Image (cartoon, rainbow over all chains, first blue to last red; front, side, top):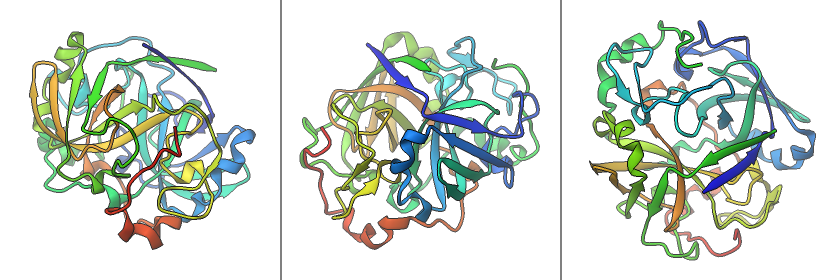
Length: 159
Length: 159
């Protein structure tokens, strides 16, 4: 079953290539970026300015391959791709939570951006922490690496 | 720019139609579901069983139309689609956080499922609360309705 989407805008960030990028939003605190939304979607932005954070869904446009197992940036062992956020997944969709700073017409100023410059945007959703029935979270293989996430940077292994 | 993805499996739930469904995962606590993953992706599941919760990304296959503003289930006023999780959005991608109960070969048992039965799955990502740089969350127009989310059910307005 083929499913077709279209980019609704472009994400801009200081990261011109994946190399050296933060590997998660929490390692990208304060990193400023911008969403240039296609102007036809301006009406769809109304009421969004009341939300402090948004999910952005995007297309990993640099992911040229696909693997079912990868060695994540944080690890030395191979892991199943669905237990990682690596871009070279079956459907190359990325997901980040970013801080929404302001909206002016079709331009969204965002912070905590861990996305490469020029990434095609697929969707924006409100981040609603209260509504997610999440407690007693376990994070598997990442548990022993979670203190490294702020210092570790990406390289080119996933393009 | 056209972007093409393929379903990697199917999500099963007790909800045969959107009518009467919980409108958010927190209103679906304990609702059991199942992911039937395409068997070729079994290697990609390794290490996922260490995670208590996962993001599932899916295609709103019943969304036959597209609107830039909608009246959400919780509200009486029209809101910009990007400030809601309504399915009839420019790219009909859904996102939920569900509890991962078990994995057996290509079958994932999940809980807190707010997805209609038969929904095509696009991606699975680990839910890593610690890695999201999120604090001081504001939830805009939803603030005054957040106590209604557990009792309110969906209807057919978004198909």
